[in-house]
Length: 68
Picture 1 (cartoon, rainbow, N blue to C red):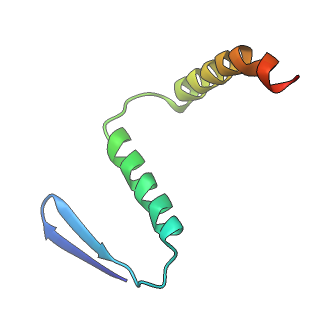
Picture 2: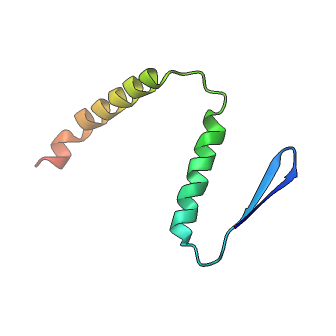
């Protein structure tokens, strides 16, 4: 594996072709998450509360369909 800094805005990472593409995709998704949240000022407790609310709303909407 090689890591090169191209300029002040880019880092190039070269992997061996033997690495599973699924694993590379997971790494890329995590890096995208880091980029998206780099300037986020939200507290983890607020994020957890929002996630709980979304999950509860989803379950309320889909409960009957899934528990026949």
